[in-house]
Length: 321
Ligand SMILES: Nc1nc2c(ncn2[C@@H]2O[C@H](COP(=O)(O)OP(=O)(O)OP(=O)(O)O)[C@@H](O)[C@H]2O)c(=O)[nH]1
Image (tube, rainbow, N blue to C red):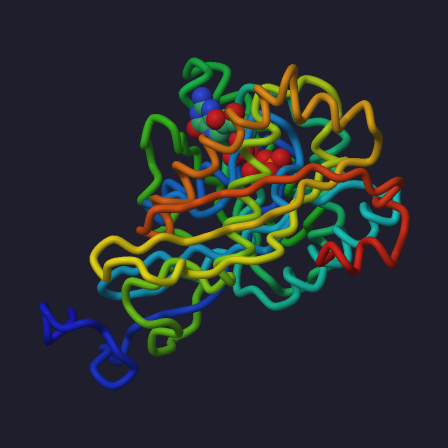
């Protein structure tokens, strides 16, 4: 119990049995990692989309509880490296995973265990002592019987590939229906070390605001685009500043951002007929950015073609990968 019920927790007043540490969700694209992160954190921080592989940056959401603090590192989907970009994503995943206290392996209840899942669990087996919890996501999409079968095959997969009894625990959860979200938090927090809180109360993410803003623009730009744009679209916020001469109680943030695509044909898709689509992307992105920043926003979006940027190290560096 926190003796100072109404005071914010600090390293000084945190109870001696307080736990704090890092957890990471891995799983194939669309497994529901971002949605679960959002459900746990309670605010839209990680980026969700119905298209695979939208999570490019390592975005942390922080779950604050009276007896623990769970810092979530949202990694991009582990997958077989195909391009340089893929290799870099995997390096990023590995670097992230070696630093966390517990890993949540997400596998959706409505899809059979596939080669992608096996590949990921094989990689996780290399992590050594890091405890791995299986999270069976999207349970609202299946009936009891199918869920039972899925839980069994997940248990088998763990025993086969992880050894020593397999997954430490298996937790079914639906982030959308709000079932068992608290159990996920409770189970993960058991594996955190005794430690005072690592971040001040109320802090949700330590990503710079420009990264969050770029992710929100990227999410808006991908929405409803059917082809393979996810791998071909990068967003860079060139400038973000408070407009001068604004009344103190009504500030405005100016944001100038570039959307990079690989081909002129993709540029046309992003912009749309007569610029209609880009305007729509702009207004949706602006609405979500205003929510996060808490100010009015002027958003200027430009689309540029950066050929084959996925394979070019110089371009990748410039785009922040
Ligand atoms: N019905 C249902 N749908 C879900 C649930 N969780 C996620 N989804 C949906 O599944 C899709 C993928 O979810 P994300 O959270 O973006 O998946 P992700 O694993 O972060 O995906 P990547 O960023 O591509 O790795 C989205 O359309 C979500 O709305 C759930 O509990 N129930």
